[in-house]
Length: 165
Ligand SMILES: [Fe+2]
Ligand SMILES: [Fe+2]
Image (cartoon, rainbow, N blue to C red; front, side):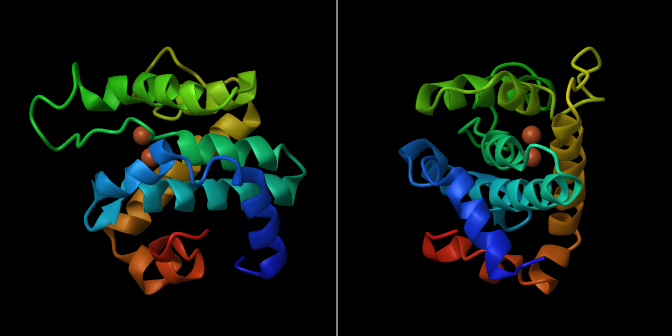
């Protein structure tokens, strides 16, 4: 899971995104428990990348869409930080911010916009990679909340705390 071959290929998929100010700004946004949004998105991106690579699917788009899926850039715990209900509206905010830092493919757009389905009822994922990121998001969030993220030492293995992935 954590071997250098996977890690290097993953890094190459997100190389042009990881150091952008917007992506780095996710470090300042709380996500689950003591996990920030950057750490969560890298975790989701890596798990999605591994699954898609395993099945011969578009792991490049899965890594990129996974990294950008929660690029909403506000603290959703704070009242007045956003309009509407965060659970429904943040995929569109993330897509808007993501489209400012790179040209997104249709698949990457679908991954970001549909990642909250089935909560967002009508936004059903169109591609298998979108379903993978959708599922990885939920599994990773659970792992973060149940402290499995910490027990698996994901932060260290993905080097997210030292600014490198
Ligand atoms: Fe999300
Ligand atoms: Fe997420």
